[in-house]
Image (cartoon, rainbow, N blue to C red; front, side, top):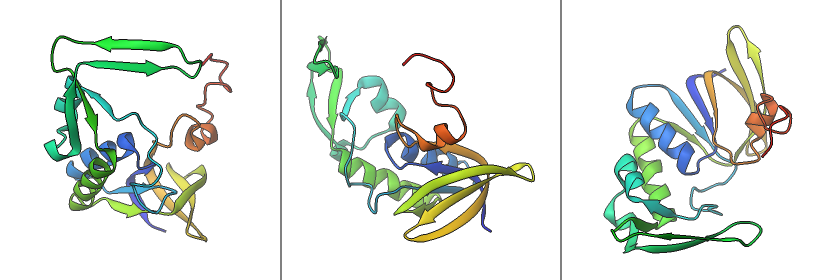
Length: 171
């Protein structure tokens, strides 16, 4: 059974950034995602504020032009206007950015496991045993830390009983 310092479920922006930073810090990291490519079905707005551009060190070719006015819409179609007199917002070319971040992860020694799904986890000898399905093959790995970067309806959070509904928190 393979052992990792950190296992990250979900290769979206948060999962990729987390894997990149931990891999660059010398940790043994496994990054898995149910998709076969980081560019499939990207679910993010791709609007970055100036501070994000500094924190993520995004290459220029992964960004569109500067914009100063953005309108965001809630699920109930309520509009929120974001306006700045400064060059505050940039649109991300997310597919290109995700590829860039994945390549940095791989350069840092992160193991990439596409087409893999999180099934469950349990404690085993002071570590976490993570059961995954890679392709059609079930397998298990041991990890010191498990990170759920698998979105708002996180299966990792649900399995660890961290989801909001189970803890009585409002959304």
